[in-house]
Amino acid sequence: MSGRAPYGLVATTCAVLMVVLGLLVSGEGLSGPDALADEWVRRSFDTDLLRLLVLPTEAYVLIPVAVLAAALRLLGRRKPEAALAIVGPLIAIFANTWVLKPLFGRWKNTWLAYPSGHTVALVAVLTVLVLLARPGVATAVISLVGAVVLGGVTIGMIGLGYHYLTDVVGGTFFAVAVVCATWMLLSRVARRRAPVLSGG
Figure 1 (tube, rainbow, N blue to C red):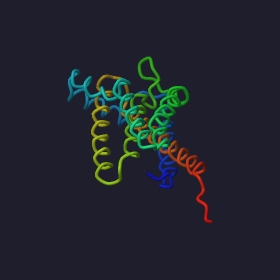
Figure 2 (cartoon, rainbow, N blue to C red):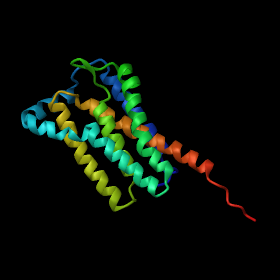
Figure 3 (cartoon, rainbow, N blue to C red):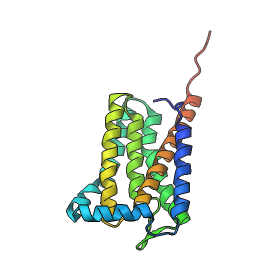
Figure 4 (tube, helix red, strand yellow):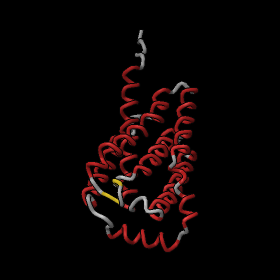
């Protein structure tokens, strides 16, 4: 995995989209797309299935996955990638909780909802897995499975009343932005610390 790929562009684009969407829904309840999604989900899915769909966002699922990814990279002596597996999701989660949610001030029931913290945690870990996967089949499979999981989680959170659809979209953009930016910075630091080969 090269830190010279356009991670900066991806991070910037996702961050801008998250901010624009946040400004559009800041302080509001249901938007048009939120209302449509809410109606469809509540009409189509029962509560037991909805609870099952949100399980991938739980800490007891995500933490072992991130730790395992970091451990495997450490065994391969790839310290920047191991750091990404832990640091990327942590930065995303803390920044979302302590900065973005109060900043946008969008409430759902009694809690701040935008961007979705459940989504930020899940997508940050999924993005790490995609970035660490071997290019080709592995990347494609993880991306596809991740998209399916995210779709299920989205349905679950809407149906259980945790979040609006736009909260999930904003959380997805933010998580991808943070992980890509973190990898860009980690790889830049790693290149600076790499020994310079002698030409003599």
